[in-house]
Image (cartoon, rainbow, N blue to C red; front, top):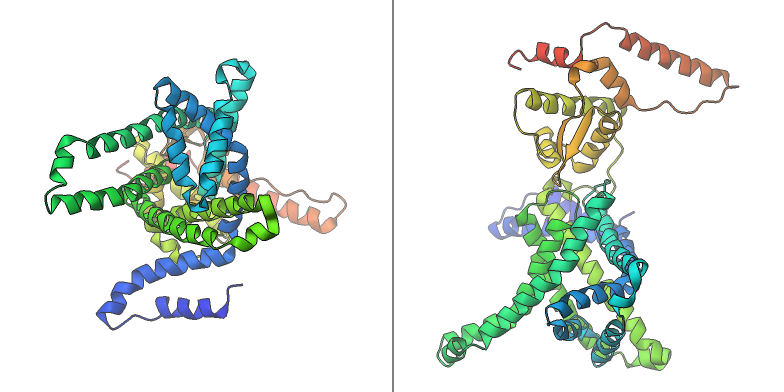
Length: 436
């Protein structure tokens, strides 16, 4: 139950059209801000952030050990500690102590002597963390189906092995360009000096925005438009940098924590900062979802269940579109494109596609989840497809007369539909569309 003040603001932004130009300009960002506030009040994303804090504590060392091993092969592993210091900078003076202890612990892990089982566990722990992040991102994007196990290991390991090299290469390239003779000479003259100083100040923002944009476009198990990923990355990147400044001031003035928790104070502060960081990352992902699906701004996180007629109608409508394109020799459409064509959201589309895949009538391929027929549409009838979409019958009590009577009536109705003698689904579709 959302508080009354939220409802009043909601009515103001959605039920009234501003008359002033300034009001119309502020209307759209105000609706996005209101949707994010609603998500914060509902608490589901906050719970996901808390879960990721626990996952981070368990997987941080294996992740750093894997990155450390890869970077060590390129001779740039010594740059790992400054990056960790930058991430923990809001913790104040204790940031260097924590990052130093973590690096020492990681450095003591000898990957070469772990053995096959130890290396397998190291890789599994590293991949499982990204899998938990994917589960949270899929929840935000209303996606129920995650990547397969083999696809997960292949794609995640490629990011874990190549990502650190690319990140540190970009950092090293930026540092070398900044210290080059041409740049240092130009810095002596205006306006180049001010421009170079401004670029240097903005470089941390650029790097964090670029990293978050990649995460928002890669991790969700759906096709994310680059504009939506960039919008979420900009919001989360600037929010993270701003929050780090505010949190550093909070830590500097939080002397009461040390008095209460003594040596455990820094651990409590670390947990709080991890929670704030994940909360910002998840809300940036949520904003990317809203930018790609603006129709969801009004709704809640959980979509109401479809009606029984919609359960039967939408899957057959999807099959009609997929089979027609296949028969016409056109390439299969990604699920996101079908959602836009049929004007349905991702959750309803996933519920419609699930029984079609389970019965073997529909298949999907690739990361974009392109839909195509999995069996010859001439091998089944429209009535068969309709019955498959209805799902399995519920369990009934054998000693209950009313249950038996209702089950008998439903079975008779389905048998009557199946005995219509209609042609195959392909022939039925061809008859409805002569151009097929």
